[in-house]
Length: 385
Ligand SMILES: Cc1cc2nc3c(=O)[nH]c(=O)nc-3n(C[C@H](O)[C@H](O)[C@H](O)COP(=O)(O)OP(=O)(O)OC[C@H]3O[C@@H](n4cnc5c(N)ncnc54)[C@H](O)[C@@H]3O)c2cc1C
Image 1 (cartoon, protein in one colour):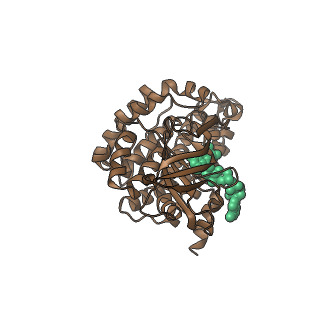
Image 2 (image 1 turned 30 degrees about the vertical axis):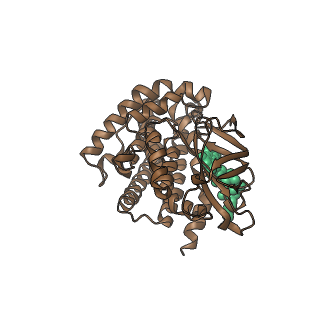
Image 3 (image 1 turned 90 degrees about the vertical axis):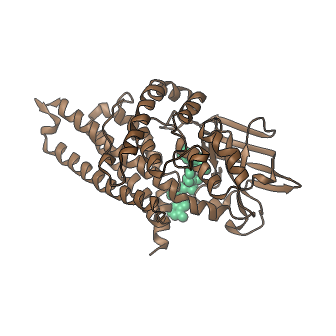
């Protein structure tokens, strides 16, 4: 594991409490996650105990109120995401946190008390299931239905590409509660607890080009009955507006990981080109190497300033969806550009998976695709013009 001090050490939102928290998270990752990560990659999922251990260390839902197992702010979440990104660990704590934030924002007091504390302890693992085989960007095309039947909903359909799909046992599920309603109007979010749930089935862990330690699966629902009280929000049909309200959180969180990974790529490549010799001198002595790394370092510095601004806005409750879309699009594009240049500077070794830069290259590519593709981000920004 290669660790450099994150550039956020100088960020305006950083303070002593967060520095202490970073120390705890870093030590936990080094001791409990890093030694097992290669095995997690082979088995395509973390060990289940990783979740409860992370919960016991206070890493899972740091930005919820203390009564629900948190006690910090988004800045704590950002620190945890940075530490995972720096260590190159694929762990679905962001998705888990997103589910918790849906429950926190739209759940009743009873729902929050029931689900959030066990989620903070890692006893319940969250997954968010929106995407379907025929509906990704175009979410209004989802076909999964939840039909009201007395005190229950009866759910039929399937989801794909679901992070934490294998280990997840509390799912925030996007459904059509009114399949006849036009567009997004009939969409709702329902919480599904999957332990011993008749009609619920998880498909195999999908083979990805990167992020091998994360369990990404298909989910199947065949006449699955869940209590009607598991609907998020007071009435049906609010699913789309709930998603639109929560997406800035997810997009900012992805941006934090993206810029941290890009910074890490520049750091490890700088070290590599100082040590690797060609034509009798270190690679860093070639002007092309210095210029490429100068460009990468400048881009990551710009990205860090932008992320810091977004974090401060979010902490003040002022991060708007358009700025969040800008951050997700620009920072994940920046991450991939920078890492690709760094792979080039590693030569053939940059293509070998035993080198961290190769794994970063494969792991980062999906950031431009999930949580809304970067093309959809540009649409969101475009609507504001
Ligand atoms: C590793 C991984 C993990 C994921 N985790 C989750 C998860 O936990 N939960 C979940 O619900 N989903 C998850 N996803 C799904 C992800 O969010 C979708 O793949 C993504 O939203 C894109 O949808 P799609 O794959 O159907 O692509 P499509 O929507 O078919 O898009 C294909 C291409 O067309 C472009 N396109 C589509 N519409 C437009 C438009 N209007 N204008 C311009 N271009 C357009 C897209 O940008 C893209 O380039 C995950 C995906 C991956 C790969």
